[in-house]
Structures are given as structure tokens and as C-alpha cells.
Length: 166
Image (tube, rainbow, N blue to C red; front, side, top):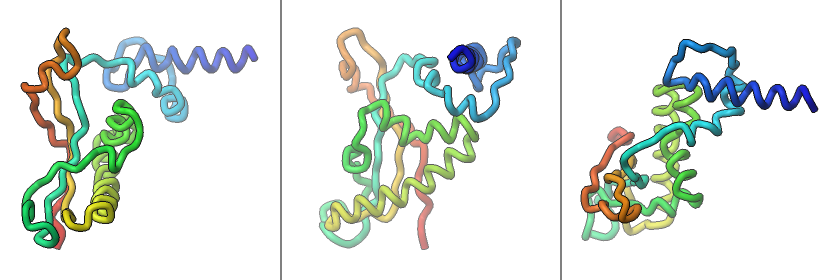
């Protein structure tokens, strides 16, 4: 039990005192498996002055309902991600890929995820089929009046957009 306790304490300390994006003077060896196992701290080690919601959009095809053909339409995030807000944000942002393997792996994860979202949307909404997917976040300043109090100041950040397919 003491050995397990020491591994747990060491793993937590190794990640707390040297987050990957802030290289500090103090160094503790932390192999990849340990970083992966103890990344739970990641969601608690950041602060932002903004609130955010994930956003998914699709480029409508020229088939189906004529009212929105050829336009980017907003897709319901709930249709594709059933978890709570924070978990959805983490999954859509591909946080694990970014933390463990960098920006290139994150983009690869997004390129894998987008066709899955597109296929699911097209199954659920055949009259509003889409040919391309893009996603990102809508963000707005925090306010003491509440989470959505300043949502009128909303801005969009695009993370990924599928390339045109032949």
C-alpha cells in the first residue's frame, strides 16, 4: 500500500509542478504513461476570462430542403455528444491528443471526427444533409451577473474545417 501511495503522490506532484506548456526550472522525471494517467489536473490548471460553448456547423448540400441549400448551418451539438458541457468541450477539442502528442495529432483527431459527425447528421437529418463540417467555440466575457449575461458579446473561434471533397 505504501508503494501505491508513493506512486500516486509522485505522479500528482510531477504533473502539478511542471505542466507541459510551462517548462519550469524544477524537473521531476515523468514518463508518458504517467503523464497520461495523471492528466486529470489539466482541467483544473487553467483560467480564462471568457465562457465558451462548443459549436458545430455543416455546409448544406444542394439536395433536400431548398430553404438552406449551399449555406453553413448550425448543427445541434447534443445530436453528436451526449455528455456534460465540459466533457463535450474536452472531446471536441481533442484535448488528450493535443496534451500527449501535440497540435498535429489534434488536427488528425479532428480530421477523423468530422466525417463521423457529418455521416451521423446526414442520417438524422436527410432533408438537411451537409457536405462539410467545421467546429470551434463561441465565447463571450465572464460577468458576475451570470454565465450567459454577456453572451450578446459573443465571438467565434474556428478550430477545424473539413477540406472540400471532389
